[in-house]
Length: 222
Image 1 (cartoon, rainbow, N blue to C red):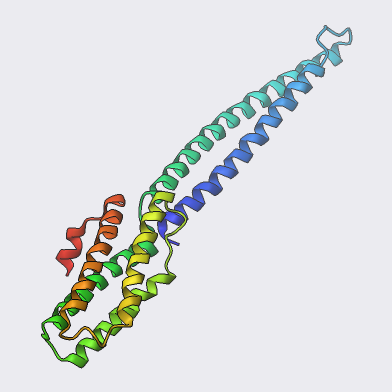
Image 2: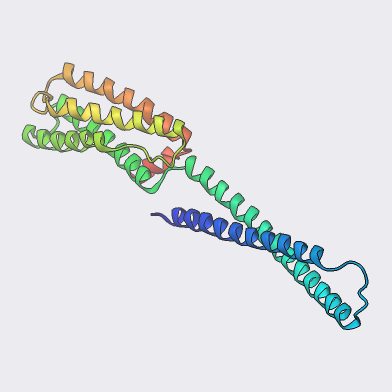
């Protein structure tokens, strides 16, 4: 798990712990109040007994105040941890997980490397065997996106956008894997796949927009 995943898990655990703690002190307060109510209200004739009752009442009131202080403190912490966990949950839903981020980055470069190799094959710009080998490798790598699914931590809309993108990459890869020997010097097939790549880029753009991915960072690295 990533650091933020651990923070989220710890936040949930702490929320549960302090909630249980506040529950304990609430029950304690109720029991103390019941004990105070059971004490004699009227003044007793037995002075020793009267002093004992007074002392016990004071002790119970002190315990009640102390328990109330801890209850309010733990209740505040429960709200604090719950709020922080909710924010992290929202943050995770609206941002790429580590695995999805890796898949998106890899998909970006696979698509453009594939596009570059197709352009070379179309114009016979390199050795045919070398180009076939490169295209086969890229096609296989893209086809492997059939095993990828967006993390369920993401929002439902985000999952749908990513899964469409992954599926589009997979489809191009599967189709290309059956045509690796037919690209060289074949403008018609190459142009058809270049059109498919542009369609994949629309899904890619949707994913980048939703997750606020800066595409210029990819271009600069490349």
